[in-house]
Length: 623
Image (cartoon, rainbow, N blue to C red; front, side, top):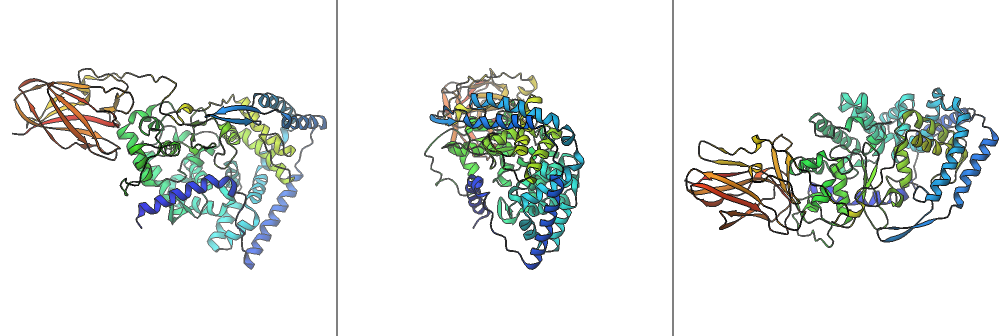
């Protein structure tokens, strides 16, 4: 089986696994322990019990009247009447969360009551000296002593990894602040984290270290993307690939400053896309549509979906070249919501923008980070999604917001961890029920959002979820083109080079967009948008009449396309556009008969067309 076929099958399987992970997460496989493993389990269980006892002694005294007021307020949330909303043509009942105005209004009262309690426990919340024992208890509870023992019993190396983690208070606190290890698999997380640190000196400090740890905590399966490669090895390869892209100035300028605790670094590596596709998408955006790398963050990178992956149902991909990846195939003819969301996701991943899948009933969409907060893209608001990264969608959004305040977030965790030590129920229904301390941790998150004035920036491009038509009129931004990019030159052998910007009227329209190239030059993109063809017209002074070979320097991501040349208003010539796979390449030469002196050549594409980017044309004398 070819490597690409293996990756493709794994990609499909991974997508199915991720789609059901929210349900599977609660059913871990049973762990068989050896006699040595049982001894280790007993050791970790005693450690957990000792920590639990120590933590319960830390419970601060709370004014009973304030405690009762808080309990009464959040209890009333269960009685809020649901509202019905229309989402993508379907009626949806909303009871919990900000999507229900009555719930949101009532929750303001709950938060006020929670603040009154928090004011009484300032000393407890400020006591970071107890943070380490609480974090270690939370880790042992999440991992379970049996799972830790199951990993540690495999050998001395594995046991040393668990010991290294549990003996490093700072690392334990950091790991738990970043959300802990997916599935409680801390042994595998430590294996990957250690491998990354062995492979890169920079991964020991600054955001490089946070990124290495966060990625290792997020992906804790035995393999990652590549089914025949151990997870630690794969994650090292991704880390080094992204590190080189960072050094080369390819990753987004915000990559080193994702902010807060560093939680967002969990989501910079793709959930199921091969490095070959990551490298290819970088090339697509940098060569084919560099303008998308400079947009405001809502649409930065993922705008490629709107411009080049049309919403189309019934696409048959069976006849497409087998050597192409799924992502490359999506560019050929477009697709429905799933393929569009996949392309949008990988476009962000490739440049270090944290991204996640954001499915809603009957629809596939995505969510990604911006400097102003997370947004859903090409689908409904978080309210109406099914889950994000295995979490209730509004809880994911709240977590992303609260993690922006490292100090306040640790205080929320202290309440939560105290509640766990006291065996309280977890919060449910967006803070409507749960144990006292754990709910206080939930409302501390709400308090952070309110205090920091963190806004929910809403959905992006919801009207394009299953459509190619936006309700918002897109502004066409004009670009000032320097004269140096319009200069036509003639080489010693008579070859004439015509920069694409040397046309008679270099203006942006629905189909034609002039833009700076990544290398600092100028290029034009002839896109899918618009119903009518647009022209690029060039007036040339030809020194000698005769036959010339015409070529265009182009970049494309689709097959079987051509553009049309009109020469001196009489001759029409078809020029095939090669499938360059986002590289720059010359078209095959076509013969033009030109007269001495002034000649006019016009370029256009017949509808329906696909996109092509162009840097320059050349005319080479055939004699």
